[in-house]
Amino acid sequence: METISRRGVLLGAAAALCASAIPSRIQKMDKPPALPAELVKEFVIAAHGDFEKTKSLLAKTPALLNATWDWGGGDFESAIGGAGHMGRRDIALYLIEKGARTDIFVAAMLGELEVVKAYLAKHQSMAKSGGPHGIPLIAHAEAGGAEAKAVLDHLKTLG
Image (cartoon, rainbow, N blue to C red):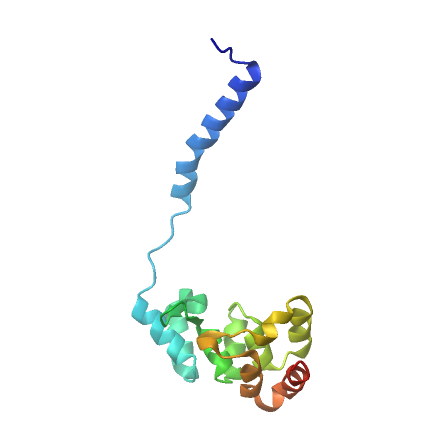
């Protein structure tokens, strides 16, 4: 017959206590229902070029800010991602002002050379990575026009 040590009893009691706390913690973390898919799609499409509609939709539903639409095959895109590859600096800056999460692709379009350089210093493979729809980093810099010329020139030196 196996004897139970005092340590075993204490560990068992601690594990049971932790396990009993999990359901109540999950209940406290309830979230509102998912956003309507068509609304997310409408917002992401608007941010590709319709500044007024982007502002209007976000004002009505602030939770759209970082929502993503799946175009299929894992091609997820956020509103700021759409603004990024379309060269819509105005929309991207507005979304950032509202707290949108940004990435190296948007930074390239905005001409944020130091951000792009710092990111590539740590993750060199991102220079060849694709953003939304598989659009490469260099295309985002091209979409940024004159404000992103320094980023474009830098990316060209990387080959």
